[in-house]
Amino acid sequence: MANSDACLVWYSQNTSTVLTPFQPATSSQYNGQRPKVSVRWQPIDPKYIGALTLRGSYTEAFHAPTLFEMTPAGTQNFPEITDPFSRVIKSPYQIEERVIGNPLLQPEVAYEWSYGIVYSPKWLKGLTLSADWWHIDLRSLISPLGSGFIIQANLPGLVFRTPPPPNTPPLPNGAPDRGPIKLVIDPNDNLSGAIFEGLDYEAVYIVDSSIFGHGDYGRLTFTLNGTWLSRAELQVNPNTKRFGIAGEFAPPGFTLTDSLPWNRANVSLFYDGAPDTWMQGLDTGAVVHWVGQYNDDNVSLTGSPKLNMPRTGGPGINAAPFPFRARSVADWTTLDLIASYTFNLPPPAPAAVPGFAKDGGKNVKMKDGKEKELMPLSTAEYGCSNWKSWLNNTTITLGMQNVFDFDPPFVAGSFENGYDESLATIKGRFWYVQLKKRF
Figure 1 (spheres, helix red, strand yellow):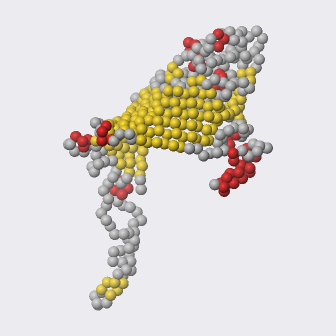
Figure 2 (cartoon, rainbow, N blue to C red):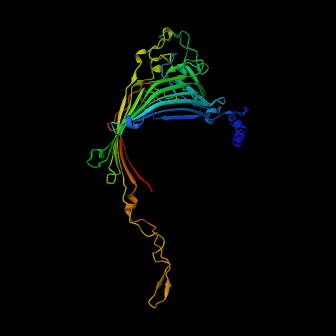
Figure 3 (cartoon, rainbow, N blue to C red):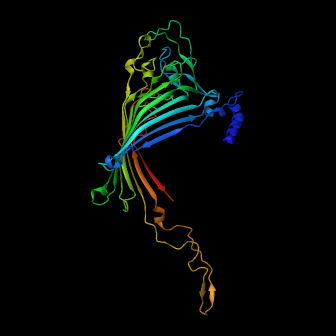
């Protein structure tokens, strides 16, 4: 441990000046050691009601800032934004955005705990039910917020505006027009934190045809798994209030997380061929993917100045000027099909070891009664003429995604393409063929 600490200090003192000139070495102060504890307990003997398992875990995580996040150099973008605080220029309009690093960043830390139950009932063989409640507390998050979020939150010191022309009328809610935006600074910064809570659930039922007593014709596996997001809250800095983001569309400039629908689930049914038959390598099935309904980017659509009240805004001058624009994103269901076959051919009959003839190097009696030593003859194969050896352990897969060619639901807050890139795709119906050989 002493040697590793010395190496870390040396590395910090000899590289920190490249990242932040004239800054003292700080990376040697990071403590990356984090605990992880998990517990499993079976309180009841399985012979009574089946296998019942209680489980829980506690984990801490650590992530140091990267070079890109710390370097003072930045990048320049020109995004289109919606400005709820000015109508001098009709929204959406294009502005300048500068994404910059921050040499004073601190490491991210996370605290996660979960507890759950797994039950396999005695009265229904092959059924397994499980549920886990989880809680994730993220602190000192490193992330740029995106120009849209910075404007909506009106974060001080990051939005620069041009004064409005004289006699500019007030906004529909009575608030004064602040003038059009000319520049947004989007720094990588340590956010105060975010909290996520939810429930993961799963049901697996395996039906083995041999249990019916009429031979083995394979196995069916039914699976249902999903996630319910109960809570998601974000606090940008200690001077702002925490607000909920559960069930919300995440704008493209928001890099902390993807969109957060309350409910997501998958249902699948697969068939595996019977062992010790030609159907042993057959595996075919169907998967249904479902993403539940969630809110659009209503802060941008309604012009609400209150992030925690995106549909209506607050009372008085904080009222949203366009509350009628608030909308939800419809749920989306797709079906995938897949079929694969793996060739498991019986092994060939034992053969002599390649390299030398069976009688090579032995003494053989000649016609005159004398013995003579034969030179070894090579029997090595430099090419394989047996097609079965190439076919064995080969898997052929044929699949199709989004069988019914359903388009993703429309998202008004996604100004670039009108759909949620984090949860959906516009590929439509897509089929593929895969060939895999295992040697």
